[in-house]
Image 1 (spheres, rainbow over the protein chains, first blue to last red):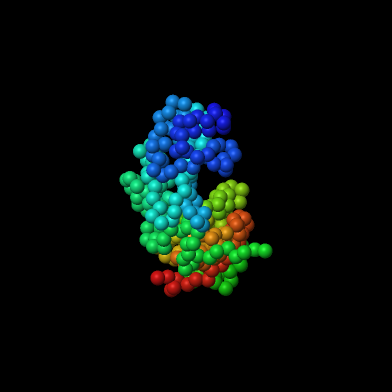
Image 2: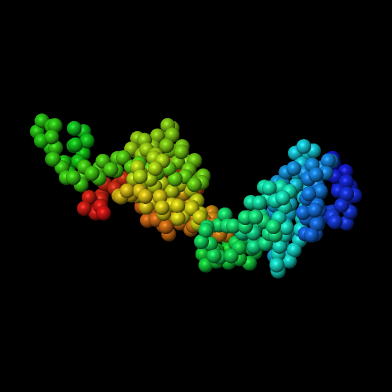
Length: 157
Length: 168
């Protein structure tokens, strides 16, 4: 499927649950709502024309104003790639787990929970695994994070 | 007798050779400095240089440095690579497991003072001297094997100066 075919197919299938973003140059990039996340993920995995069997990444981004969460999806059988994006406020940031669809998302979501403080609903093992066990300094990937021994790179002119 | 001639301060020669008298200090420290076995502790790219140094081209063995995979058999820990805050307690544990006298070489910029991770890093320990006492610092990113040789020769000089009374 080419870029246009895939975009048309997905837009027809999901209607206004998807919104195509301009940012995707090589693969379509869709904005979705977090209520529809698990539903869309299950649908694209079981769809015969898509067969999305591979969750490459889950990326969380702190833009300085909002959280963005990006799901990079791929199908190895059909050679398709596209991305889903969620946008949410800092306050009560929470997202559904997709581990029922792709079990590998378990660790990605733990990492997201640990480094960004985004709560994951329906996750079966939300425990610390990247930071030291006795860590008590919050979520280090946030833009406004700070710690006593943490130094920002000085501005270079 | 070539070696004996070089150490007249410590060794007393007897005519005809075959027997020398010297101090226990000299024998112990000299032999210890000539067989510093180091613990394999490579955590990042410095470990590649350490491997190259241990292999046949640079041949670390000619200094009596042989790698050991157990802290119980090592005299020296060459911390080769970035030490993260999560790794720091493990480094401390391995250092504690080594029998005294024990030595530490901090190899590379990361272990000396954080290196490229000094700024903008939440995960890296800014110098391993916060965790274990360091004898020799070898800067570089990563240091070439020649730098590692120089550091080890410096450490051997230090070991040769020690007294067995100081062993705890």
